[in-house]
Image (cartoon, rainbow, N blue to C red; front, top):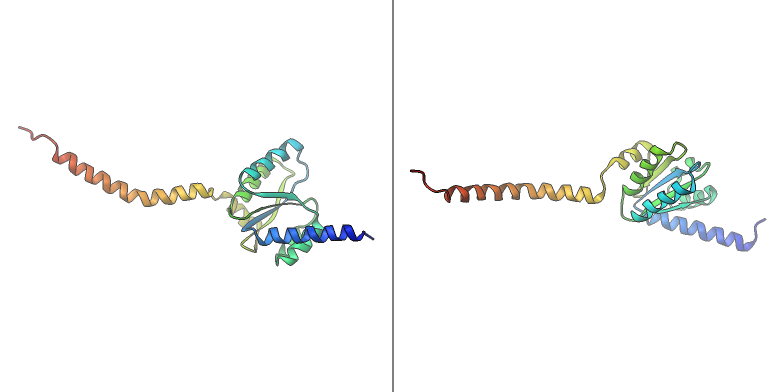
Length: 169
């Protein structure tokens, strides 16, 4: 039987995991077996730079946390080795980084994910991973808004240039 101190620590971990799940806009669960320390360090660095929280978790503790966070559908994938990547404000970064990593590491696989408190399928997770980054999407929107204005400015400049042409004799 575990000591009272151990049980309290486990309760605290479950509470922390629940808070992380509830406070995240998106998350991805992965099976990380078979990756070496160098690759794991590189992956963690990429995730940290993108503002993603990534940690290895015990399935039993995560199972309790997903129940409390109302994400029970994730329980079916809580077997083997499990790590979770969560983000508070970027919906696609974790999926994109982990999916790219999984393509080059055969034993590293995506298990499942969630977006805005709803569990999503592996197919939806793959589609999410293919979306461009937030910065690229914002730049695209800005270009769409800027295009008519730029075309109008070019048209006005053409009129000005035509009016300033010297008359031919």
